[in-house]
Image (tube, rainbow, N blue to C red):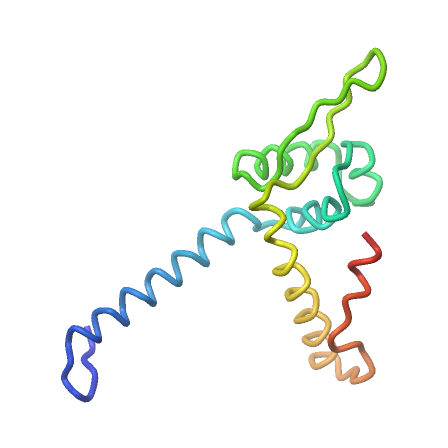
Length: 139
């Protein structure tokens, strides 16, 4: 373990623990939302509960098998919950964000803003929007 210039080993240990806790928290978060589709699925649910077929339509390129798998993982991790509705004879399942899942909204929009800015810088396109939440209304 490295020590601070002032020799205060206790402060150094606290800094190391904070760094470890911070990295662990990031790993935990990424474990829940990692993958190609999870944040996109959460994004579709920001405007309200959706059925499987509606999400499949909104997430154009996802296969039913992948959507089912990702929904199951998001449910196990407490990000979404299934709601059973009886509309007529058959039962329709809708998926909705849990309070924990709803907290991802700020993360999604911050991530999207960063993505737009990063794309503009990496492609040299300085005309790209730098702080737009227009996607929020597109959901």
